Length: 324
Image (cartoon, rainbow, N blue to C red):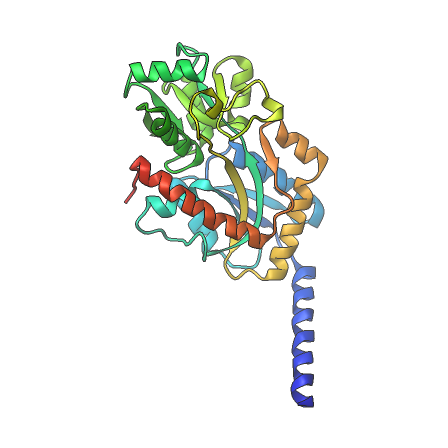
């Protein structure tokens, strides 16, 4: 019995030393943060804010690596297959993480079992924005116009299955209209085509739409969230504007490859939350409609991902969207 107790204590001590060693030696080289869309959108801006703070905190360069394509599959697969040592991360979003499992019969990554959740990150506000040529200055006017012109309105999105795509499909369903979806490789390219008039509307993140809103090149009608946001109090929710039950909340969360040591996940979680809690970061993101979560544990984030997969499975089924 004494021998087994001694052996157990030695094992605990060894594990503690290994954990301490992992924490103290990490990061040993630059950290790569993969983004699954093109530069310029909300997830890209969030990642660059985090990369700056991680670089300042640890003295190792944190680099943002944009890998658009395949509805986020390209970037997610690269991250899933990376060495699980905390030096490769991915900023997961609703599309690649929560929606793709319902869109595709088979994925080259498992959003639940293929990653270690690190931090839920932020919530990003989306707005229903239209081209100024459209004769609609409210959601009610827009619905009336869309019903009078079925199949003639095109809405752009970051990609198939991303939050802005689902926002449009849910609007089709609940408002009883028929708009045509045009996918892009990121929110910024979709916004360029909206300004040019090649699509008539998008459900864009504020970070993508704000400059064009201020310049009058697009017209924001409402927010997609379940309640109004203080920073954009002049914009009503779509639900209160005549589409009861409508709500689409966007998020960007940090994931590491499966098998990343818990000590490193814990260190990343603490530093990411500390960065998101800094006043300069919060202020920088808030004006873009991006708001941080700083209290949720990695385990809670993992549970949230599972609930989001279940939630959007129904939205995808109802929309009829499918990619094989």
